[in-house]
Length: 276
Ligand code: ATP
Ligand code: MG
Image (cartoon, rainbow, N blue to C red; front, side, top):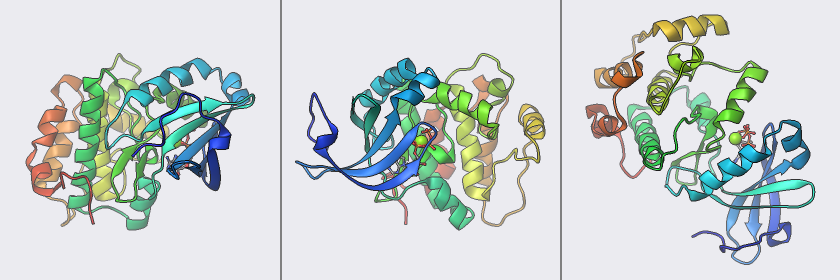
């Protein structure tokens, strides 16, 4: 159910609808391919911006990676085209928007919903690692929901850009593994750490190492200063999974395969990736 695959797209192939959002590098609109009536999200990036931040080569490389990744929990990039001023990315449309908004609205998720999202993310990451794509920048803002509530990892492969953005914008450190905040060598196991952070945040509504200042968050991450506030809603199985992911030694973190087989996931997650 893709839009017509085509060598050369142009803006004339699309009817542009309402704006969906604005990012650092461009705006996103809902759009419909004229011939197939297929609804997509069109991300428009000004070339001037790409030159200013010197990211055009990186954008091209990352677009090639995202085009090749086809997984139900990874937002599809169907294609791209450009005119004299802009680059357009033809993206899968995530009808239910940002997971982050859903989390803020509800405060926290049920164990069923949290486990379903964690399983979806784990499967998407396992697929990426199999395809030798590592180091993701998974955080709630980069997770979107489709019309059925299925989780989609967006902004795929923009990790270097996101890192520089984070530094310049003094954004949050909350999702970074200890080896990353300490600027040490890191590998795919940073994703396993982030799964632990997200699992905690989904269940408690706040990330585990939240603090008043960046410096304090930094200290809490490197100490792995983890505690579980009393909650009748969070089971010991959930806490077990989180504790086995938030481990300082990256080689000792639970593997993606073992997450999929963890009792909390088996008991709670919907393998179809959708929840009520
Ligand atoms: P960045 O420039 O780093 O990607 P960003 O994620 O804030 O920053 P965009 O990816 O440009 O910005 O997207 C802006 C907003 O538009 C998103 O936060 C989201 O709400 C919405 N959006 C983006 N892509 C889609 C999509 N495929 N379907 C539905 N909404 C989308
Ligand atoms: Mg984005």
